[in-house]
Image (cartoon, rainbow, N blue to C red; front, side, top):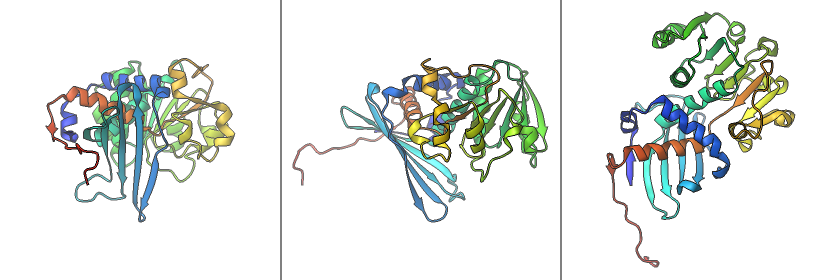
Length: 315
């Protein structure tokens, strides 16, 4: 069994282009993977645990991602962290235990960039990024690597967060920046990528969103009014959105990302359509990324021999 921790995975120096191609591959192959709904367990008022299993049959790989979320950091461990276990399907042997924090953030950023690029109008001029934490930086890492068109990045003024964000990306000559003083100004954009982890209500009135906009709520909340009014609701997996408040109302306007990736249905059909894309994260991306990272690491990692019963009746 191999062990790949955060530092080992990060040391591989994976490029944005390579990881983005993994995201593209998963969307094209989604229907050949086995993806049960994730399960949630609660611990007290702040603790939440999620278990996300899946199987990639054509790669002879199965696995599970285990996510822990707490309100506050404990003993230096981030409030949100995860681990991934990979197993060989045919031989039933444990292949690896891996850090999932790096993989989760990178696939989240890659997926958000994929959706922003795939479902945007033909010539977007403005991109709003709301919530300027690690997820937003992961999104920009991929978006700027893949999209080479000039665009204005709109940010919300809050303390010095917008200025720090600009400092990280201002060297890119394709980017201009605008700091907004209210949500209405921010969200009146061609592409809106929301990286805030939670919103108790809709972020703004539906009239704020311009024709032709694409909304990508990375953590899914704050845009329920879009579910009722927008022309299309794009989802990663139907089973994961059936519990949404307005599912019954938008299911006739719903399409899956994988169906667009495989050209079975049209994504954006014109520059007037308003589209919201729900891609809350499904384990097939995590497991595919983990499989590819395991391949790239090879034997250059910690390895622990595993013993298994050699006799049927071992008691």
